[in-house]
Length: 296
Image (tube, rainbow, N blue to C red; front, side, top):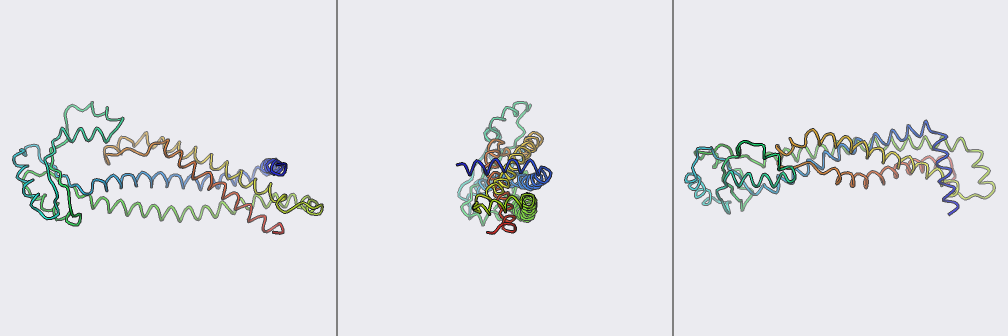
Protein backbone atom coordinates (compact mmCIF):
# COMPACT_ATOMS: atom_id res chain seq x y z
CA UNK A 1 0.00 0.00 0.00
CA UNK A 2 2.88 2.33 0.88
CA UNK A 3 4.52 1.59 -2.50
CA UNK A 4 1.32 2.46 -4.38
CA UNK A 5 0.93 5.68 -2.41
CA UNK A 6 4.55 6.58 -3.19
CA UNK A 7 4.06 5.84 -6.90
CA UNK A 8 1.01 8.12 -7.16
CA UNK A 9 2.65 10.92 -5.17
CA UNK A 10 5.76 10.87 -7.33
CA UNK A 11 3.69 10.60 -10.52
CA UNK A 12 1.72 13.77 -9.68
CA UNK A 13 4.97 15.60 -8.85
CA UNK A 14 6.55 14.48 -12.14
CA UNK A 15 3.53 15.60 -14.16
CA UNK A 16 3.77 19.03 -12.52
CA UNK A 17 7.56 19.32 -12.89
CA UNK A 18 7.42 18.42 -16.58
CA UNK A 19 4.17 20.25 -17.21
CA UNK A 20 5.19 21.52 -20.65
CA UNK A 21 5.78 18.02 -22.00
CA UNK A 22 2.86 16.66 -19.99
CA UNK A 23 0.56 19.21 -21.64
CA UNK A 24 1.99 18.24 -25.04
CA UNK A 25 1.26 14.57 -24.28
CA UNK A 26 -2.26 15.34 -23.09
CA UNK A 27 -2.88 17.46 -26.20
CA UNK A 28 -1.62 14.67 -28.47
CA UNK A 29 -3.76 11.94 -26.91
CA UNK A 30 -6.78 14.26 -26.66
CA UNK A 31 -6.51 15.14 -30.36
CA UNK A 32 -6.36 11.46 -31.26
CA UNK A 33 -9.35 10.59 -29.07
CA UNK A 34 -11.29 13.60 -30.35
CA UNK A 35 -10.93 12.47 -33.96
CA UNK A 36 -11.74 8.90 -32.92
CA UNK A 37 -14.85 10.15 -31.11
CA UNK A 38 -16.11 12.10 -34.11
CA UNK A 39 -15.66 9.08 -36.36
CA UNK A 40 -17.35 6.93 -33.70
CA UNK A 41 -20.49 9.04 -33.42
CA UNK A 42 -20.68 9.32 -37.22
CA UNK A 43 -20.34 5.54 -37.64
CA UNK A 44 -22.92 4.84 -34.90
CA UNK A 45 -25.52 7.16 -36.41
CA UNK A 46 -24.91 5.94 -39.96
CA UNK A 47 -25.09 2.37 -38.68
CA UNK A 48 -28.41 3.07 -36.95
CA UNK A 49 -29.83 4.60 -40.13
CA UNK A 50 -28.60 1.57 -42.10
CA UNK A 51 -30.20 -0.87 -39.68
CA UNK A 52 -33.43 1.11 -39.82
CA UNK A 53 -33.39 0.83 -43.61
CA UNK A 54 -32.60 -2.89 -43.43
CA UNK A 55 -35.57 -3.47 -41.11
CA UNK A 56 -37.82 -2.06 -43.81
CA UNK A 57 -35.98 -3.73 -46.68
CA UNK A 58 -38.39 -6.69 -46.91
CA UNK A 59 -41.23 -4.24 -47.51
CA UNK A 60 -41.68 -2.16 -50.65
CA UNK A 61 -43.85 0.93 -50.37
CA UNK A 62 -45.57 2.16 -53.55
CA UNK A 63 -46.61 5.80 -53.24
CA UNK A 64 -49.81 6.71 -55.09
CA UNK A 65 -50.92 9.95 -56.70
CA UNK A 66 -53.61 11.90 -54.84
CA UNK A 67 -56.15 11.22 -57.59
CA UNK A 68 -55.62 7.45 -57.49
CA UNK A 69 -58.73 5.79 -56.06
CA UNK A 70 -58.76 2.89 -53.63
CA UNK A 71 -60.45 0.74 -56.30
CA UNK A 72 -57.50 1.31 -58.66
CA UNK A 73 -55.14 0.52 -55.79
CA UNK A 74 -56.93 -2.77 -55.14
CA UNK A 75 -56.45 -3.76 -58.80
CA UNK A 76 -52.71 -3.10 -58.42
CA UNK A 77 -52.70 -5.16 -55.23
CA UNK A 78 -54.29 -8.10 -57.02
CA UNK A 79 -51.62 -7.94 -59.75
CA UNK A 80 -48.83 -7.69 -57.20
CA UNK A 81 -50.06 -10.65 -55.15
CA UNK A 82 -49.89 -12.83 -58.26
CA UNK A 83 -46.19 -12.05 -58.73
CA UNK A 84 -43.41 -14.41 -57.72
CA UNK A 85 -41.62 -13.16 -54.59
CA UNK A 86 -44.63 -11.33 -53.08
CA UNK A 87 -46.06 -12.74 -49.86
CA UNK A 88 -48.62 -10.01 -49.20
CA UNK A 89 -49.79 -6.57 -50.37
CA UNK A 90 -52.26 -4.13 -48.85
CA UNK A 91 -53.61 -0.58 -49.09
CA UNK A 92 -52.00 1.86 -46.65
CA UNK A 93 -53.86 5.13 -46.13
CA UNK A 94 -52.24 8.50 -45.50
CA UNK A 95 -53.82 8.52 -42.02
CA UNK A 96 -52.10 5.22 -41.17
CA UNK A 97 -48.87 6.61 -42.60
CA UNK A 98 -49.09 9.67 -40.34
CA UNK A 99 -49.73 7.48 -37.29
CA UNK A 100 -46.65 5.40 -38.13
CA UNK A 101 -44.64 8.56 -38.73
CA UNK A 102 -45.60 9.92 -35.30
CA UNK A 103 -44.42 6.70 -33.66
CA UNK A 104 -41.04 6.91 -35.44
CA UNK A 105 -40.59 10.50 -34.22
CA UNK A 106 -41.12 9.45 -30.61
CA UNK A 107 -41.10 12.33 -28.11
CA UNK A 108 -40.74 14.91 -30.88
CA UNK A 109 -43.96 13.86 -32.61
CA UNK A 110 -45.62 17.02 -31.27
CA UNK A 111 -43.84 18.96 -34.02
CA UNK A 112 -46.17 17.34 -36.55
CA UNK A 113 -49.13 19.11 -34.93
CA UNK A 114 -48.08 22.29 -36.71
CA UNK A 115 -48.93 20.80 -40.13
CA UNK A 116 -52.05 22.33 -41.69
CA UNK A 117 -52.89 19.05 -43.44
CA UNK A 118 -51.51 15.56 -43.85
CA UNK A 119 -48.85 15.81 -46.60
CA UNK A 120 -48.26 12.05 -46.79
CA UNK A 121 -49.68 10.09 -49.77
CA UNK A 122 -51.77 6.94 -49.81
CA UNK A 123 -49.67 3.92 -50.69
CA UNK A 124 -49.48 0.18 -51.21
CA UNK A 125 -47.21 -1.89 -49.00
CA UNK A 126 -45.75 -5.08 -50.41
CA UNK A 127 -44.08 -7.72 -48.23
CA UNK A 128 -41.46 -9.78 -50.05
CA UNK A 129 -40.94 -13.50 -49.62
CA UNK A 130 -37.82 -13.41 -51.79
CA UNK A 131 -35.57 -10.34 -51.49
CA UNK A 132 -33.80 -11.21 -54.74
CA UNK A 133 -37.05 -10.39 -56.60
CA UNK A 134 -37.20 -6.86 -55.17
CA UNK A 135 -35.83 -5.00 -58.20
CA UNK A 136 -38.15 -6.86 -60.60
CA UNK A 137 -41.22 -6.11 -58.48
CA UNK A 138 -40.21 -2.45 -58.17
CA UNK A 139 -39.82 -2.11 -61.95
CA UNK A 140 -43.26 -3.63 -62.53
CA UNK A 141 -44.86 -1.43 -59.86
CA UNK A 142 -43.42 1.69 -61.53
CA UNK A 143 -45.34 0.85 -64.72
CA UNK A 144 -48.74 1.00 -62.97
CA UNK A 145 -50.95 3.96 -63.77
CA UNK A 146 -51.59 6.15 -60.72
CA UNK A 147 -48.21 5.46 -59.09
CA UNK A 148 -46.19 8.50 -58.01
CA UNK A 149 -42.98 6.80 -56.88
CA UNK A 150 -41.53 3.47 -55.79
CA UNK A 151 -38.32 4.01 -53.81
CA UNK A 152 -35.66 1.33 -54.16
CA UNK A 153 -34.18 0.87 -50.69
CA UNK A 154 -31.57 -1.57 -51.99
CA UNK A 155 -29.77 1.23 -53.81
CA UNK A 156 -29.80 3.34 -50.66
CA UNK A 157 -28.54 0.51 -48.45
CA UNK A 158 -25.70 -0.31 -50.86
CA UNK A 159 -24.60 3.32 -50.89
CA UNK A 160 -24.77 3.64 -47.10
CA UNK A 161 -22.79 0.43 -46.64
CA UNK A 162 -20.09 1.72 -48.98
CA UNK A 163 -19.94 5.00 -47.06
CA UNK A 164 -19.84 3.16 -43.71
CA UNK A 165 -17.07 0.87 -44.94
CA UNK A 166 -15.07 3.87 -46.17
CA UNK A 167 -15.53 5.68 -42.85
CA UNK A 168 -14.36 2.63 -40.89
CA UNK A 169 -11.26 2.08 -43.04
CA UNK A 170 -10.35 5.76 -42.99
CA UNK A 171 -10.88 5.94 -39.23
CA UNK A 172 -8.67 2.91 -38.61
CA UNK A 173 -5.82 4.36 -40.69
CA UNK A 174 -6.02 7.76 -38.98
CA UNK A 175 -6.39 6.33 -35.48
CA UNK A 176 -3.48 3.92 -35.95
CA UNK A 177 -1.23 6.82 -36.95
CA UNK A 178 -2.42 9.01 -34.07
CA UNK A 179 -2.01 6.21 -31.51
CA UNK A 180 1.62 5.76 -32.61
CA UNK A 181 2.23 9.52 -32.37
CA UNK A 182 0.62 9.67 -28.91
CA UNK A 183 2.70 6.74 -27.62
CA UNK A 184 5.90 8.38 -28.90
CA UNK A 185 5.04 11.71 -27.25
CA UNK A 186 4.21 10.08 -23.91
CA UNK A 187 7.38 8.01 -24.18
CA UNK A 188 9.46 11.16 -24.67
CA UNK A 189 7.76 12.83 -21.70
CA UNK A 190 8.62 9.95 -19.40
CA UNK A 191 12.10 9.76 -20.92
CA UNK A 192 12.81 13.34 -19.80
CA UNK A 193 11.66 12.47 -16.29
CA UNK A 194 13.92 9.42 -16.20
CA UNK A 195 16.91 11.47 -17.39
CA UNK A 196 16.21 14.16 -14.80
CA UNK A 197 16.15 11.55 -12.04
CA UNK A 198 18.92 9.31 -13.40
CA UNK A 199 21.22 9.88 -10.43
CA UNK A 200 18.39 9.39 -7.95
CA UNK A 201 17.40 6.14 -9.69
CA UNK A 202 20.99 4.88 -9.53
CA UNK A 203 21.07 5.50 -5.77
CA UNK A 204 17.70 3.76 -5.30
CA UNK A 205 18.95 0.71 -7.19
CA UNK A 206 22.21 0.76 -5.20
CA UNK A 207 20.34 0.59 -1.88
CA UNK A 208 18.21 -2.32 -3.13
CA UNK A 209 15.05 -0.77 -4.60
CA UNK A 210 13.30 -3.21 -6.94
CA UNK A 211 12.69 -2.42 -10.59
CA UNK A 212 8.93 -2.26 -10.00
CA UNK A 213 9.39 0.20 -7.13
CA UNK A 214 11.35 2.48 -9.47
CA UNK A 215 9.12 1.79 -12.43
CA UNK A 216 5.85 2.48 -10.58
CA UNK A 217 5.83 6.33 -10.58
CA UNK A 218 6.68 6.49 -14.30
CA UNK A 219 3.97 4.00 -15.18
CA UNK A 220 1.39 5.90 -13.11
CA UNK A 221 2.55 9.16 -14.71
CA UNK A 222 1.75 7.83 -18.19
CA UNK A 223 -1.58 6.45 -17.01
CA UNK A 224 -2.52 9.79 -15.42
CA UNK A 225 -1.72 11.62 -18.67
CA UNK A 226 -3.92 9.15 -20.56
CA UNK A 227 -6.73 9.46 -18.00
CA UNK A 228 -6.73 13.28 -18.14
CA UNK A 229 -6.76 13.12 -21.95
CA UNK A 230 -9.71 10.71 -21.98
CA UNK A 231 -11.80 12.90 -19.67
CA UNK A 232 -11.07 16.03 -21.70
CA UNK A 233 -11.79 14.33 -25.02
CA UNK A 234 -15.12 12.86 -23.85
CA UNK A 235 -16.22 16.33 -22.76
CA UNK A 236 -15.17 17.91 -26.08
CA UNK A 237 -16.73 15.19 -28.24
CA UNK A 238 -20.06 15.33 -26.43
CA UNK A 239 -20.11 19.14 -26.56
CA UNK A 240 -19.59 18.97 -30.33
CA UNK A 241 -22.19 16.20 -30.69
CA UNK A 242 -24.77 18.10 -28.65
CA UNK A 243 -24.34 21.06 -30.98
CA UNK A 244 -24.60 18.84 -34.08
CA UNK A 245 -27.73 17.17 -32.70
CA UNK A 246 -29.26 20.60 -32.06
CA UNK A 247 -28.55 21.73 -35.64
CA UNK A 248 -29.36 18.61 -37.68
CA UNK A 249 -31.52 16.50 -35.37
CA UNK A 250 -34.80 17.52 -37.02
CA UNK A 251 -33.36 17.15 -40.53
CA UNK A 252 -32.25 13.62 -39.68
CA UNK A 253 -35.80 12.77 -38.64
CA UNK A 254 -37.20 14.12 -41.89
CA UNK A 255 -34.60 12.48 -44.13
CA UNK A 256 -34.22 9.07 -42.48
CA UNK A 257 -37.33 8.78 -40.26
CA UNK A 258 -34.99 8.02 -37.37
CA UNK A 259 -33.54 10.25 -34.68
CA UNK A 260 -29.87 10.65 -33.81
CA UNK A 261 -28.40 8.40 -31.13
CA UNK A 262 -29.16 9.90 -27.67
CA UNK A 263 -26.34 11.92 -26.11
CA UNK A 264 -26.51 9.98 -22.83
CA UNK A 265 -26.05 6.64 -24.62
CA UNK A 266 -23.01 7.91 -26.52
CA UNK A 267 -21.48 9.53 -23.42
CA UNK A 268 -21.57 6.27 -21.47
CA UNK A 269 -20.07 4.26 -24.33
CA UNK A 270 -17.41 6.86 -25.18
CA UNK A 271 -16.34 7.00 -21.55
CA UNK A 272 -16.11 3.21 -21.46
CA UNK A 273 -13.95 3.21 -24.62
CA UNK A 274 -11.82 6.33 -24.12
CA UNK A 275 -10.79 5.83 -20.49
CA UNK A 276 -9.14 2.40 -20.94
CA UNK A 277 -7.76 3.45 -24.36
CA UNK A 278 -6.22 6.66 -22.99
CA UNK A 279 -4.76 4.88 -19.95
CA UNK A 280 -3.38 2.11 -22.19
CA UNK A 281 -1.67 4.62 -24.49
CA UNK A 282 -0.11 6.41 -21.50
CA UNK A 283 1.03 3.15 -19.92
CA UNK A 284 2.46 1.88 -23.22
CA UNK A 285 4.43 5.09 -23.71
CA UNK A 286 5.88 4.76 -20.21
CA UNK A 287 6.78 1.10 -20.69
CA UNK A 288 8.58 1.83 -23.97
CA UNK A 289 10.56 4.64 -22.33
CA UNK A 290 11.47 2.59 -19.27
CA UNK A 291 12.65 -0.34 -21.36
CA UNK A 292 15.25 1.97 -22.89
CA UNK A 293 16.49 3.56 -19.67
CA UNK A 294 16.00 0.92 -16.99
CA UNK A 295 17.32 -2.61 -16.77
CA UNK A 296 14.22 -4.67 -17.60
